[in-house]
Length: 330
Image 1 (tube, rainbow, N blue to C red):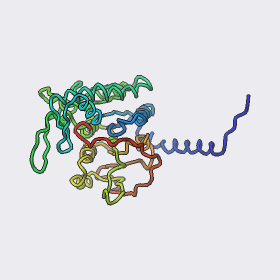
Image 2: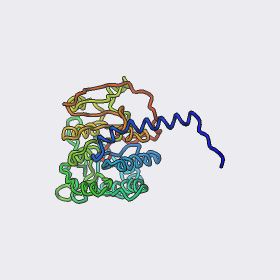
Image 3: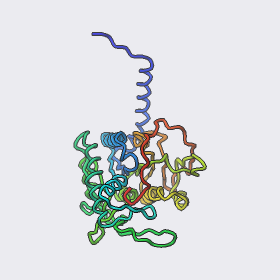
Image 4: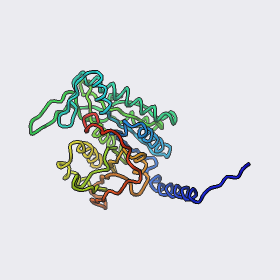
């Protein structure tokens, strides 16, 4: 047998990995047994490498004793299918106008395509994931909503917001050791199915599950302090401070930050938006001291707004085509 050798550089890399594992220890101890709601969206849904990395991260959380729950939209996939079928897709105020014909496509894509694909990626690691939608076991009840543009109310069709959550089925799946994967379509009280925003649905579900964390994947590094004049990212902000900033945010960021605000005000300990273009950004957020993105904390937290100059990332974001601006199904 020929002896094998190991260079000092290789040994140094191995030691660095051990240091990373040790850094994760206090966070493992803190979050083991906790429910973590993750909103899956943006470019992480359309790049094959990022899809696999996200699935790996979710399974890693589960194997470490955390209880991840995934909520997803599917804006790019819906737009693609509508185009293939020759159905016009229009947006008003950042929300997709959803006709009954378009709603059939939304339902088909979210439940039958996006959800099934993610369940398959997760189940490549074992029989863990179960797909469902807001229709199943009355999980979500929606109320139809419109949109106000320049002070005028506009009808946008079968678009709703979650007004009631019945989390029992999700809790049963968690207790059975499964990973729920939830598509954001939901009926109203009369049974009419609506397209609902995945960000706000994730926030409402996090509150109903008494989750420890809400993590929202985005296509930016976090909430910028003064974009585009500055590249400073707000690393940490209280719920009251965020509420004051909301009117000045870009349309696509508002539902994400509203979801985080709703979650924290409803009892979730921390809510964070992170850059889903960075492979394994979810693990970096949960298991490192620095984390990524922007964290929203309760008002009684000991720290307040913290702004940081965005450094060159340790891992470069994966270059992908720009995703559509946030809509009802994002």
